[in-house]
Each structure stands twice: as C-alpha cells, then as structure tokens.
Amino acid sequence: DADVTQTPRNRITKTGKRIMLECSQTKGHDRMYWYRQDPGLGLRLIYYSFDVKDINKGEISDGYSVSRQAQAKFSLSLESAIPNQTALYFCATSDFKDTQYFGPGTRLTVL
Amino acid sequence: GQQVMQIPQYQHVQEGEDFTTYCNSSTTLSNIQWYKQRPGGHPVFLIQLVKSGEVKKQKRLTFQFGEAKKNSSLHITATQTTDVGTYFCAGPNTGFQKLVFGTGTRLLVSP
Picture 1 (tube, each protein chain N blue to C red):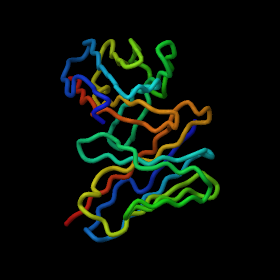
Picture 2 (picture 1 turned 180 degrees about the vertical axis):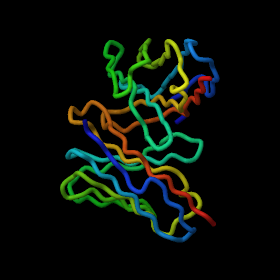
Picture 3 (picture 1 turned 180 degrees about the horizontal axis):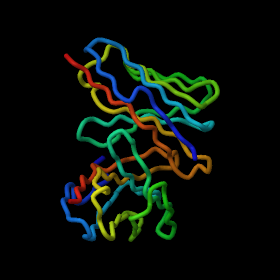
C-alpha cells in the first residue's frame, strides 16, 4: 500500500557496515512490524511494536535493532551487516483485526 | 514454537487448470488469513476466516477453514496468468500478539 513507505528500496553494502532501513505509515495504526523474506522460508518476524514505548523481539531478532521514533515511524538497523542478512525486508502495520498492510520492501545485499 | 506449513511449495499449471494450496498449523487458530504476493511485489491481504468450517469465495478463489481450526485451503478455479504469485496463509500466535506466516506456495501459470 502507498500508505506504508520504505526507504531505501534497494541497498548494496559491505560486511561490517551499519545500515538503517526506514518505514513510515499514514494509516494511523499503532502496530508496526519488520519482516524478513528469504526464498522458501516465507516471512519471518524480526521485531514488532504495539506503540512508541512497546518494542518486542520476533523470531529472528539477533543482529538487528529497531527504533520507534513516532507512531508513524519504525526503523530497522543492522549494526554490523553480514552476508547472510542479504534478504528482502518488509515493514508492515496492522489494524485491530491483525490484518497486515505491507510496505513495498527493501532489497538488501551484503557483500 | 508454533509452526504453519504450506504445501505444495511450488506448482506450475497451465492456464485454465485448477490449483489448491493447503495450510496446516501446529496449534489451533482463532482465525486464518490469506495473502497474495505478486512477483516483485509485497504481500497483499486477501481474506480472513474465523469460524470453524467456514467457506468464503472471491470470484474464482475459494477459501476454507477446517473444522478443527488447524488447517485451511485456498482453491483457484480455472487459473489465469494474473493468478501468478506466492500465496501465504497466516494465523495469530498463542498470545495473539503477532501473525505466524506459512512458508508460502508459489504458483506459476503458463498461457
């Protein structure tokens, strides 16, 4: 949805670099999520946040950190990128029915 | 932890043939959601099923929720090239805090 935007859309970086992926939404949802997608593995949850003061680890949080700067903004950081973090990253928001609204994704390559 | 599996992982059909993907959860689900991801795109919500044994239709797509609320299926009648993509099921985890996505079924339709 255009209501959920992600920057950058593509990024190539080198091992050891710090990377930040940003997500913004205009849907007014409190809940925001970061997922990672790898071929054959589906969507795996990295972190999720139910409001600005509530941050929770997902199933694959190691090597990642997040910041919820405002209701509308949720950033994902890779403190020291490694090649196996090469993947497609999606930000999502959800309403009270837990329906997920995804951003367009960021394709990250770590060399 | 809770797991949601889908079969098949991949299917290639000729246009006009039917297609079915199956979703199985290791735990009972309060509801099941289905998403479609077009090639190069992001997952988009299709439908949510809540009741045991529920069946819903969207044009050529038929969604079913099992009686035990641990499995679901998506059937597409007379596939079209526009049906190409990956179909994911997802269900809330035991604590109702997040969705657990299935591994996805990738559908390829040849004209």
